[in-house]
Structure formats: C-alpha cells, structure tokens
Amino acid sequence: MRSVKIFPSETGVSCWLETSSYKNHQFNMADEIEDKYDYVVVGAGYGGFNAAYRLSEIDPGCSVAVFEAIRIGANDSGKNAGFLIDVPHAFGSGDFSHEEKVWGVKMYTAALDKMRKLIADKGLKVDWDECGKYLASYKRSTFKHLDDDAKELDTMGIPYKFYEGKELSDKLGTSYYKKAIFNPGTVLVNPADVLRGLFTIQPPNVKVFEKTPVVTIEDGANPTVILLNGKKISTKAVFVTAGPFLQEFGLCKGNTFCPIISFGAMTRVLTEEELETFKGVVPWGVTAGHTAGTTVRFTRDNRLFVRNGLKYGTFYSCSPERIRFSQRLLRKAFNNRFPAHQHVNFEYVYAGMIHLTMNSRSLFGRQGNVYFSGVGEGAGVCKSFTMGGFLAEWANGIESDILDFLKNDTKPSWMPPEPFTTVGAEIRLVYETLTAGGEI
View 1 (tube, rainbow, N blue to C red):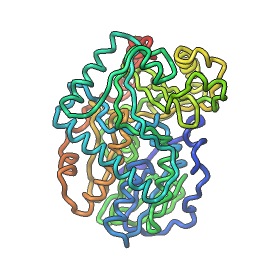
View 2 (view 1 turned 180 degrees about the vertical axis):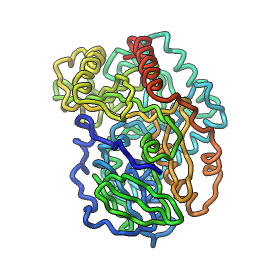
View 3 (view 1 turned 60 degrees about the vertical axis):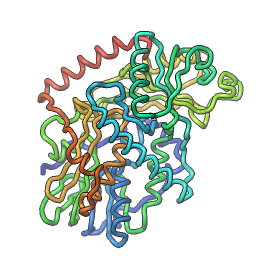
View 4 (view 1 turned 180 degrees about the horizontal axis):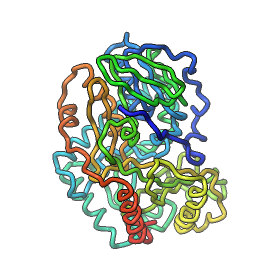
C-alpha cells in the first residue's frame, strides 16, 4: 500500500464540536502509544467506534488502538447535519432494488438500536432527540419525490405522515415549505457530541488517540502501521474506516469516491423574544425535496442551522476564503425561511465532506489482514456504524446474513481519472444548484 500524501483537515469552525459537552474530553496521549496491539483502527468516526467496540466485545482481553488524524468530532462523521436515519436515504430511487432497501432498513435500525442502548446503559448525556425528520418541498415540482418516498414506505410497512399548509407551518415555525412527509423513526443529534461521547465509553483495553495521522499501512501476516510521527506499530489486523481517504491508502482503485464539500452555518442561541415564532415547536430537522436543496435544523438548544452549497473536493478540503464565500448562499436560504430573524448572526460556519460514490454504493472489503469500509451516500452515519461492526466480525470469523450481504453487495461504479472527474463533477453540481431553485 502507498503512503498517504493528503490528510484530513479541519475546515471552518464546527458548530457541533464547539457546542459539544465532550469537546474538552482528554483521550489517550501520544506518548502512551505502544509498539504492538492486537488490532489497529484507522479513523475515529462512527464506523471506527463500532469496529473498536465490537472487537472488545468479541475478545474482551484484546488490545486495540484507534488513530484519528484530527480531533474526534472535527472529522466528517462529526460534521454532518445530524440526521441518524432509519430508512435508506435513496428511497424512491430506481437505482436500488426493494431487497436492497430491506437490507438497508435492517442495518440502519440495528445501528440506532445499539447506539440507543449504549447511551442508556452508560448514562451518556448527549444531544440525542427522538423527534423524526421532515422531507419538505418548497416547489410543487418536487412533490413527486415526496410521493415516491411514500409509495416506498408503504411497501416496507414503515409509518409516515404528510403535512402541508398551516399544519406544517405550525410544526416548523416557518411557512416557507408547502408540503412535507414526516418520518418518525429518524433521530436528530449533535453528531460530534454523540461521537465523542461514545468514544469516552470505550473499554480500558481500547486506546483512543486524536491528532495522530497514519501515513502508511504495510500489509502482511502481521501488518505494520506507520504514524506520521514515525512510530511503527505491529498488529494482527487493521481496520480502515476513513471514507474517501481509502483511496490515499491504495485500498480502492482510482477515483472510487466523489467527495463533495457542503457548507453549514449555525446561529447563536435565540432570545426569548425571538423564540416566540417557535412557541410550541419541538426540535426538528428538514431535508429538501431536491438533492441540492438546503438542510435545516431547529436544535434543542434553540439555535437554527442551515446547510447547502456544493463543491467538488478534489483534495478533500476547501479554503477559508471559500467558506467565507459560502455564507452568501447560506444567508439567503436562512432569510427566506426565517424572515423575522434576518438580524440573527451566524455564530459558526464550516465546511464538511459528503462521501459519495457514482452509484451511491458503499465500499466494504479486505486486502490480506487489512479490512476497510466507506459509505457512498449522503446520510451514511448508521450504515458506517454498522459496517464497522461487521468488519470486526469478519476478521474474527463470525458469519451472518448481513455480513454476507455487505460482502456481496454491488460495488461502487467506475469514475474517470483527473482532471475529468473534477470538471465533470463541477458541471453537474452547477446544474443541480440551478435546477434546485427555491429548494435552496
């Protein structure tokens, strides 16, 4: 495997990490890193957490080291919009068969059930709301997406409800949206808070290291992991849950992933007077009826969050200038939805990466004693969590029907080499943005 040339970086100031009650939790120190562990996990996202935790469940006496290149929660797992969905995000799409969607529901609900149980059993105080989500439309032309989702949910026997008009505006505290479908099974979270909180409950045999980039993985009967600081670690197996950075390690061919940068902004806490608009409104989250539309949250700590803007992340990052520029579109979306609150400033603005593949398929595989996974869709927290756990089971010879499905699932489709990928992606993103119209 090749040495990594590009590493994760923090882009902007993440509202989720800055408002997390676990922001200052101290994990293990770099001088505690040993020369040998039974297992090494590269990437401390939701997949990395479950890989390490499952390994400790399978063999409580094993030693595990988890390495994250930056701060846990400042990575992409902690910088999404905080939707832990219980149904496949691609409902209504002809690209996935009914059977694949059934498997998706199994994996997503299993992930939610395990996280829910861990949080309850360990007494974690994290930002976790069992309040469902809305798929909402501003334009009548996107109502079809809502109807397609409803038909799919009917075939799956999954509950939902349509809202429109005054009933919808009373639920959200804004009259911007014309129609929405509500799915009660989605959990809304502060993704960095939940992620860091979960890592604090890893058992003592699991050591967690932040800001410790891995530069090379040397495969073999006993793989060697080399850190950027020069430290070499011997292990029985390595688990890489690093999304598009799997490409940098040489664990997938060419441009498997299509990394898309999106931008998020969160307001300060609203005053009592400003909250009059949301009187009787519980925390909520809205995803748009168009793929390029704006995602919106009203959080439990009385803030408003918007996320939009799409840029192809050739180098998995973007400049501070581009983040500042993103505020124009974020502010426009915010003002359209909350005209009475145009004076409310954004306290945090950041960029986060969406780990897409051309056909929205995940990568789940093995090279010798190196096991790896990465989601390929825009709402993949639960799937990433599930895949991490099943990588641990795969390495320990534990068979199951879900593991068989993951190993034999359709693989990500081919992408052209650079510079064609970047040029093509930018053209497509401009098209999606133009056609989204008021959904942004």
